[in-house]
Image (cartoon, rainbow, N blue to C red; front, top):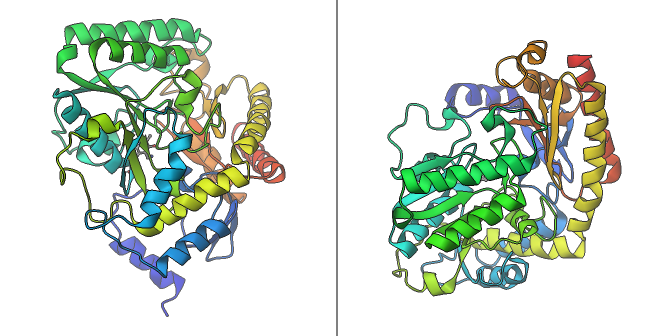
Length: 444
Ligand code: PMP
C-alpha cells in the first residue's frame, strides 16, 4: 500500500496543474457537516464540495439508496432502456418544480453539460441562434458553457474562439455600474432592463435571439441575488419577443435559497422556459437535468439528445433519496431558521469592521461577505486603499488553519458561506466563531 506521502507526490507530479486546490492533503472521509483528512484534521465544511453535499456528507439514507442500486443495476444506459430510478425521480421532481408547465426531463451528468443541452434546446425550439448571458455569470467549463460564462477570464483565457452568437448584458449589481453599494436596487434594475432593451435593438435582433440565460442568484460571480423586478422584467421581454428564458439553478436550486420553494426563481414568481439543475440534486453523485415543456421537446429528433452516462441509475437512486430526505427532514425549514442566524452574525462582524467590509448578501444558505479591496472596488478608492490585498484568500486560509473549509467567489474580495442545508444551530455557530476569529487575525 503506498504511503500518503507517495500518493501526494503522484498528485504533485501527475495531476494537471490546471486544477486549483484549496487544501493540501488527502480527504479521507465525510460525515454530516465535517470532512476528515488523512493526516487527522477534522474540518467543518462550509463549502459542501461547492454547493453539492447539501444534506451533509454520506447521508445514510442517500448512501444506502445508492448502495442498494449498485446491487441491482449500475449502468442501465438511458438510450437503451429506461431504468426505474430515472422514472421514479421524475415522479418526485414534478411536484416541486417552480412551475407546472415544466413537464419534460432530460438528465445528464454535470451542470456544464446540462447548460449545453439547454442552449441546444433553445436554439432548436426557436430556430434562432443568439444567446444573451449576464455579466458575472458562471455556467461551466465546456465550450458552449464557457461562451456564456462571464465571471472570470481564467475559465477561457487562451482558448478562444468560443461558441459564437453570445451577447452580454449587465446584471443589476453595484459593481457593474461602479456605484456605491447602498445604491437602491430599483435604480440598478431599471438601468439593467434598459441596457437589455438596447442590446435587443442595437446588437441582436429579437428574431435572432433564442434565449436569455440567467442564474437567479449569481454564484461564481459573487453570490448576488437578481432582484425580483429584474427577473420579472426579463420574463416580460421574453414573452414579448418569443425568446426562451433559461434559468440556471445549478447552484441556487434544491433548497439552497429556501424562499417560497425549492428554487430561487420561485421568489420572483417567474416561469422558466428551461430550467437547469445539478449539484444538490443528488448530493454528490454526478447528475444534472434540463427541465422544459413537453410541447417543445416532442419536436426533438430521437437520438439528438443523449450521453453514455446520462441519468445514471445510481445517481438517480441517490437523487430520489435526496428528495425524500429533504421532505422528511424538513430541510427547507432548517434553511429558513439557519439563514437569519448566519446573516445576523455576519452583519455583527461587518459592524465591527465597517471600513473593511462592504456587503453581506445572498439568500437562504447561499450567503456572501464582500471586503473592500485596493485593486477591485473602485467606488470608494480612498477608503479601499487601506484594505489589505487578497483579504478573502487570507481569511479563508486562516479558517482552514482553525479547522474550517470556506471558499471565495468571483473577482471581488468575496467569501461565500454554503454550509450543509441541514447544519445544526451549534455547528453553524461554531463556523461563525471560527470565521470571526480569522477576520480578527487578518483585519484586527
Ligand atoms: N451553472 C452554475 C450556476 C454553476 O454554479 C455551475 C458550477 N459551479 C455550473 C453551471 C457548472 O456545473 P458543473 O461544474 O457541474 O459542470
